[in-house]
Length: 281
Ligand code: PAF
Image (cartoon, rainbow, N blue to C red):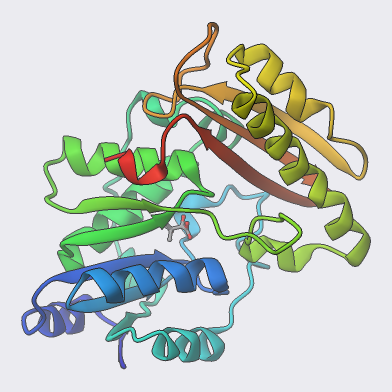
């Protein structure tokens, strides 16, 4: 596996690769990331993963400094899963001196995480647009767990006519239901047990949906009923999966999502109802 540190190196590598699948990551890789790499390997001629903890998507009070960084382990995982190359740039490579251009996504970035984390999606959209410009992949793979991020990036690729197919892949969970996240590493054993309330709540909403419930407020209530200390709910949402507008009437499709704090760790998760993540483009 090639380890590439500069945009110039990526372009030189890309010139010899045919259909490229990109998996953008911030490292601290787990089985969820591995599943994205597996998709890229299976569906493309060459898989390229990026590892870059993007300062622009963290607010000053957030966990940029403490975000787990495990480059050697990450490279080993990527190689074991058949990645052809890894792009591991320094901050100055992605944000050269004088850098001032930012990509501002539209309304799909406004509610939920966009409201809770002002500026977050500008940072995500900017860095992923740079990655698309550097690597010119044919396809890019993102996890459903960051559902709004997926929709923001699909919308940007469409609106800016970037020519990259942005594919959503199902959330990978531990056997007890906890959605895999690099931030799970922050949880103590008790907090991890408490964090299971999040997936329990979402699965309860999913069960209600399977039993025919379509009222968005009852779906939100099903989630709320499961959340108890040490988990503290920040929001629960039942929204349209395409626009992310909050539902106020029964709908044939919904994304039920939440953000919660467990101790000092902020976690997000969701379930998609009435459609599959691969149907979103
Ligand atoms: O989901 C992530 O890890 C990040 O938000 C991404 C897409 C790699 C952009 O920094």
